[in-house]
Image 1 (tube, rainbow, N blue to C red):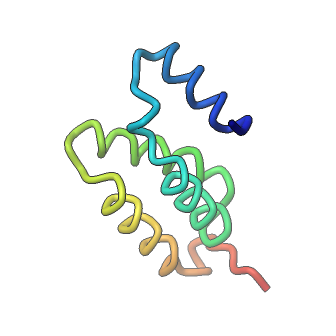
Image 2 (tube, rainbow, N blue to C red):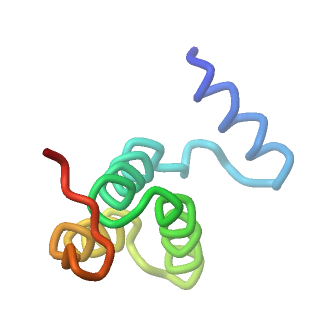
Length: 84
């Protein structure tokens, strides 16, 4: 078990959630995309928005893919950060 697994398990226990339903790789990929292509503080906010969408019935993988695609097209002139 990794530290991430331990954290997710403990956080889920605290919130009364099933850790098996947490798509950790999907959330991390979304956070990476937003942090690198839009702005770093947008990563946790985007993860929160993903959580709200999923709570309202959205498919986690589809919603994350949509947000990642949006981040990939985010214009530099609007503050998007582009890796060099």
